[in-house]
Amino acid sequence: MLDSGDIGPGQDRTTTVEKGSFSTARCTCGWYGPARRARGLARDDAAAHVTARHSPSDTSDSSDSSD
Ligand SMILES: [Zn+2]
Image (cartoon, rainbow, N blue to C red; front, side):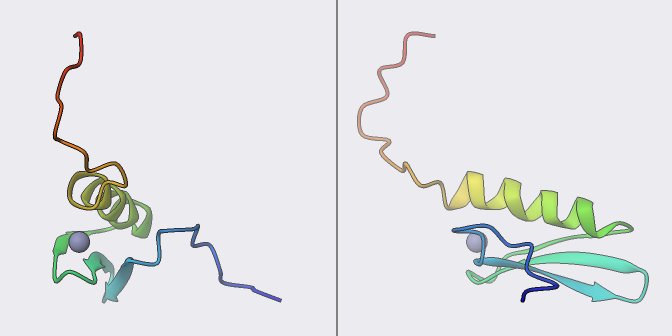
């Protein structure tokens, strides 16, 4: 039974460190997020960081998007 396993696949890279009443997102690459009052915001920062820095599709070889 996992009572505190809310981590999805591929999201074990980041963790949230609680400091007092603040939560800070941390990544295994050494990145630290800003201190948030809510852990949900810290996790959001971590998710944004993973998307920006550790995107699964890092194929920036042919940027031929018709935008
Ligand atoms: Zn990272």
